[in-house]
Each structure stands twice: as C-alpha cells, then as structure tokens.
Image (tube, rainbow, N blue to C red; front, top):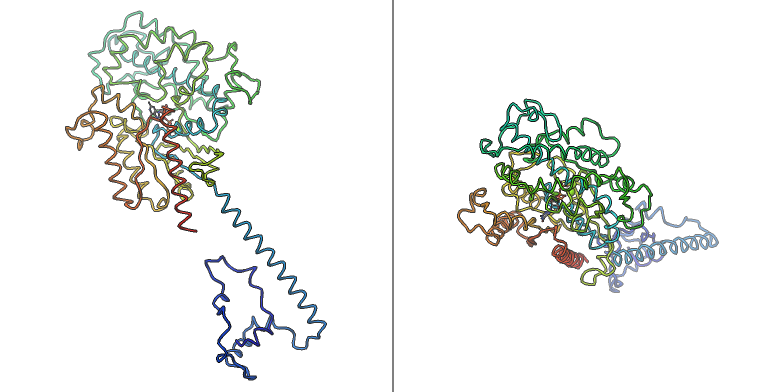
Length: 547
Ligand SMILES: Nc1nc2c(ncn2[C@@H]2O[C@H](COP(=O)(O)OP(=O)(O)OP(=O)(O)O)[C@@H](O)[C@H]2O)c(=O)[nH]1
Ligand SMILES: [Mg+2]
C-alpha cells in the first residue's frame, strides 16, 4: 500500500475491537518507521499491491462515496472523529479497569480435603477463630447442643456394651432382651464378638443395672437433639436408624451406622439458638442467649444424670469391658467423658476448645469468607480469603471436583493416628491406607497442577498417645518393621511415605507438610498463618512470572 493511499483512505477504527495485547492486531505488523525513500512508489499508476487492496471488500466498504461533495466529506469526517473519540474513551476505561483489577486481586481460595473425621471442619473452625472470633463465639449455644449430643451418644455406646455383656453372662435374664435404657433388641441382634472374648466379661452387678435404668432419660435427650439438628423434616425411619443400633455398629464404624450429619449450607445453628432462647437476639454473645431456666433445655436432664454418667465412666467393670472389646472412647470424635462435671453443669457454656472438639459430620459445602486488614507479607493480594470445607465420606468425594480448577491451595488432612482403624463407610478399608491413596489421587490430578498442596499430618496428639499406650505401628504397617515405636520415628516414617508419593507423581512441586493437632488452637494458628504466607508468596511469584 502506498503512503498516498494510506493518507487518503479513512483508516478503519480497529481499536474498539482489538483483541488483548498478547494477540497483536494485524496492523501492528506495519513498519513503525516510514519506508526508505527509494522504496516509495511515486508512480501514478496503481501498484499491484494497491490494486489488491482496492479490490478488498473491506477497503471498498469503508472508502468514501465516489462523488462525495465537500460538505458531505466534512460531515463524514466529523462523524468519524466522534466515533474515534468514543472508541478511545472505551479503550481508556478498559485499561483503567485492568489496572484496578491488578491492584485489587481476586480472593485467595483454599479447599480443605481429606477423609471423613480427618479434621477439615476443625481446621475451618480454626480459621474462623483466628479471623472472626466474635462471630465464632456467638455460635456457642448451637455447639453446646452438639456437645450434649456427643456426650449422650458416648454414654449410649457404653450402655450398649453393658447390655451385650449382660446378655452373655445372664442369657436367661429378662433385662438382657432389651438394649440400653429399654431400647429393644431382637434376638438376631444378639451381640457377636468383634474383637473381645466374651467369656472374660466381668459380671454386671444389680447396681450396674440400676445405673443403666437411671440413665434411661438420656434416650429422649438424644432423640430431641437429633430431631432438632436434622430439622423438622426428619423422618421416624431416619431417626430410628440413628438411634436403634447395637453398640458395636456405632463403635466399630459399620457401614450401616448412619452418623448424625448436617448439610452445612443449612441453618442448624440458627435452629439451635431459637430452641434454646427463642428471643432471636442474634447479635449478642450466645451464652447470654441460653435460657438456662427452660425446662425443655436438654441441659436439665444432663445435669440430673451427671453423677451417674461420671460414675459410669469411672466404673472399673466398664473399663474392663472396654478393654476386652479394644474400645477406646477417648480416641473417638466428640469425646467429652473426661469433662463430664464441666459439660453437664447446669450453666455450661462451651469454651473455644470444646467447640473444636465437638463432632458434627459435614454433608454439604461450607464456605467461610474473611478479610485480612493487612495481608501476610504486607501484600495487598491477600485481602479476601475463602476457605471451603467439604464432606470427606467416600460417597461425597465426587462433589470435590468442581472446586479443583479455581483454588489457590489445598490443605489435605491425613489423620496419621488412624493406622489401626477402618473406614466407617467401608470397614474393609484401613483409614491410613485410604488417606495415602487419596493423597496420591490429589497429587497426580492434572486439574491441580498449579494448585499449592499443603499436607497436614493430623491427629499427632492421638498418634503419640496410641504409641505410648503400646499399640504398635508395625503391627498394622508391615513395612515399618521393627523400627522404634515412638512418635518421632513413626511420624517421620509416615511423612516420608507421603513425600515419596508427591515426588513420584508431581516432582516439580514443593512438598509443604506440617505435623498438626488441629484441636490445639495455639499451634494451629501459627501453622495456618505460615500456610497463608506461603500461599501469598507463591501467588506473588506466579503473577510476577505471568506479568
Ligand atoms: N484429638 C484430636 N482430635 C481431632 C483432631 N482433629 C480433629 N479432631 C476431632 O476429630 C473429629 C472429626 O473432625 P472433623 O473436623 O469433624 O472431621 P471432618 O474431616 O470435617 O469430617 P467430615 O465432616 O465427616 O468430612 C472432631 O471431633 C474433632 O474435634 C486432632 O488433631 N486431635
Ligand atoms: Mg466436616
């Protein structure tokens, strides 16, 4: 195209439609400098190139009308100028927005993953406690109800065990045909041994049977709490399923055992506040909202049964039965039997630690948002954070995938204390083996290639206690062999196993790993702050590479 033709033909305004800068517009290929004089075509005859250009339908479409008058030309040029002014203004706005977007970055998103009971919701509670302690504490009334349910269910597990023992030691006794507190048991549900040796069961005394009877009112408390948790729509069948179970199914995590769970998107917390106080004052501390004088408050029955529950938990026969059955309630989720005098006190209000120890299974997805006034490392990009908590049971894991392509980081929780436990949903699968396999799936998932992965080897407090009590890791993990059965050796061994999977399936990624006990808020706060710093640092690095 000659310079003459360039200056005469009105230039189409591509600006408005120019694609983003990483796709250069076609005219960017034109030389920025004028061509050297010897290459200028001063010929009046149109060149071959010009002819091609004139034949071009676009050039023809935007060319001025052949017999344009000077007045028409004036109007046309004015219109073109106006169009260009508008287009430039739009460009300017787009660029301004781009700069603003760069300054106010997207929220940083963290997804919590891991098998059921690995500690995801407990980690979320730590985030809440760190960033919105006031809001966290207004939920105390709701958590009080969950803790009461945890207490009642632990007691029922023991009562069921006593029923089982009594059925063996007194096969013809009428009381042996009933479950704890009058719960009916069919002959077919007559207990079978899972791990114990029933012939060694110590006999129950009449005092034990009286104790059982006195604890019968706890049945109603359990039912009332479950009903309230699950909401008004809970059917009698579902309720019966959660309550009328032989103890072994509760304790040994039978697939038939439906644990009380809530869809986190639901408003169970609100339901409990209303149950307890009914005054709807949402803004004040929920400890103020608990109507301790309400005769319907489950705390009334719990307080009345407190001494008997304490007696039950301290009873040597009960301890012996638990030992024979290899049952360790203290390692169970939602264990409060060591704090009965406190949590059954008439004016009990849960502490932060109690709330972290409370167990309520997650069904749906919980999103927690918070804003940090000054981000880690003084970075502006960390102002808005979102943490997602999902259900970890096998049947719920398919719901994780839609989150994968949009996360900055995943915190994967692997409870390393559970080497001697099986999955609740599939008793043929060892929990530690399930965690290892899940970790392998996550590290090798192509959708997560650019996502930071942080491994929490969790429940270290329980692992330490288990090993100290003489339970041998080598009895469950053959490759551990005869290494020392202490915490340092065991935890390092397991860390290496997880690290090796990362190295094998995603060698380019750094291995971020922490030993955690997420029920310990002090240490967890430090670790989470550290993780947040790491995520911000990695994101800054990435955006520097992209920019
Ligand atoms: N002692 C101890 N208990 C823990 C630890 N982490 C979690 N727990 C307890 O284990 C139970 C289960 O923890 P959750 O956070 O509810 O588990 P989750 O991963 O959310 O489980 P799902 O909702 O079923 O997927 C709760 O009672 C916690 O208090 C830990 O490090 N040490
Ligand atoms: Mg959960």
